[in-house]
Structures are given as structure tokens and as C-alpha cells.
Amino acid sequence: MKAPGLGESQRSILHVLKRRGRATVVELADVLGLNVETVRGHLNALAGHGLVRREGSDRTGPGRPEIVYGLTVEAESLFPRREGEVLGELASYLAETGHEALLRDFF
Image 1 (cartoon, one colour):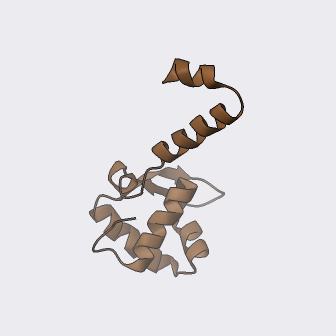
Image 2 (cartoon, rainbow, N blue to C red; image 1 turned 60 degrees about the horizontal axis):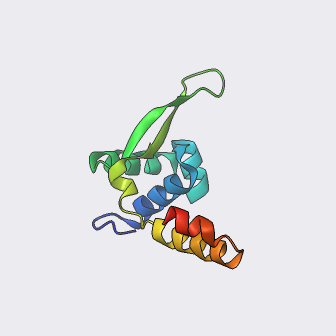
Image 3 (cartoon, one colour; image 1 turned 90 degrees about the vertical axis):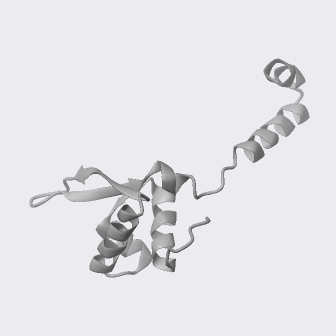
């Protein structure tokens, strides 16, 4: 991931959100072994850079619902895309398994 100007913890938060899709402050703190307030500060900084957004809240019981965070489109663009690699693997698989007609029809 290319993210100049971000610290290691902030990059780690982005990686966790990329893998999970969305997470609460408590979930991020647990996964990364960081203090909840530290994670909250990093999320505020990342939101200021336009890299994370609040995606609503999860109500897990009585009290205030927990805010759920996810990546923005800008943050998603920091991660390498693998569509070409996956497409190449699919084409190889189809050729190896005798489905050349599908390859010809599709490409």
C-alpha cells in the first residue's frame, strides 16, 4: 500500500479495514493491540485525510451504539488491484480444463 505521510499504526488500521470491510474502534484496538483512544485519534486523522468514513453504527446492547468505520474510495485506491492477475489465472484454468470455447467466446 502506498500511503506517504501515514504512520505504521494508521497503515495497519487501513489494512484491517481492507480485510474486514468495516470495524468498530474497539474491534480495531483489539486486533492491533492498541489503546481505544489511540485508535480513535488515528481514525480521526485518517478521516481528515479522506481515507476512512463512518458507515453507521452497531447496537450490541444497552447504551450508545458503536460507530462502525470503513474505507473510502480514495483509501481503496491505495491498495494494489489484482484483477489482471486473477483474470490470467482464470484463463489458464479454463485452458487447462478443456474450456477453450469459453475463452474464445469471452475474449
